[in-house]
Amino acid sequence: MEKKVFGYPEYDASGEKILTTYDNEYRDMLMDIRVYKMEAGQTRSFGRAAEETAILLLNGRVTFRTDEIEATVSRTSVFEEGPWALHISADSEATVRAEEPSEILVQCTHNDTVFPAKLYAPSDAPWGPSTTGKFGNVANRSVNTIIDHDIAPWSNMVLGEVMNRPGNWSGYLPHRHPQPETYYFLFDHPAGFGASFVGDRVFKSVNGSFSAIPGGELHPQAVAPGFRMYTCWMIRHLPGNPWLQTDRCEDEAYTWLHDYEPEMTNPDTRTCAET
Image 1 (cartoon, rainbow, N blue to C red):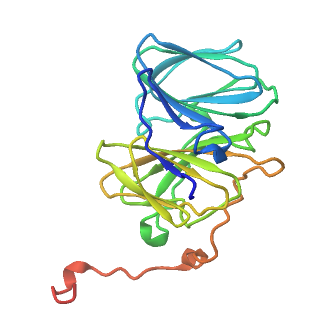
Image 2 (cartoon, rainbow, N blue to C red):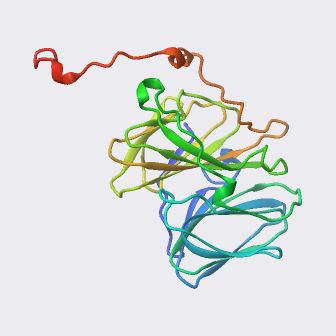
Image 3 (cartoon, one colour):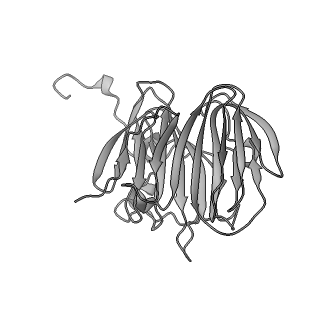
């Protein structure tokens, strides 16, 4: 029986949307990942024994509080502004109060290392350059990295964001790595959609869907023309084998494309018979 690698979760009555847990169908991700919709004035508390937690603001205005930090931050949209994310260690606690209707993503994994809480601001995770011009100029995206091994070597997680331009590919060339990875998808229009590849399987990515990519599987993705696609990407380091920015692991069947310059034909010059 094939493992589940894609999901279309819904918010429950309490405003919680469960993606991966340590014992559901996506347990191979080795992370507990949930998304919360919060009403104005609502407060939620986070923090677990022997686990680290990252709380990412997707949209709205919230107040983060820990023993060391109190800050009110806002984000109109993942498509308009950069990330605010609070990172706390094992046996710590954080509260999030929604000052207006808001959505947050919460990523947890096992880690008994104690470290100071940190609030990452948009200036800490600037959007990096896209791959404009490569692969026929249809693999354009921007990426930011909030937490990884270089930024927070005490963490067992990676947290970042990708912004795909309409009609473009991401995670391209097709690549793999031994660490499991989860993608959470949002689109700038309710009808937005894309295609998400996990190994040889292909799924329709829609607003609020996610992929749970087992280690070792190829995982490129694409978005339909007319829509921007946001992806929150989350990786779990493996013991003694953390994911590093240099660990691209592109599939050798496709590396020749780095030097490929496709010939572009103007369809307006062809006759109906030629098409």
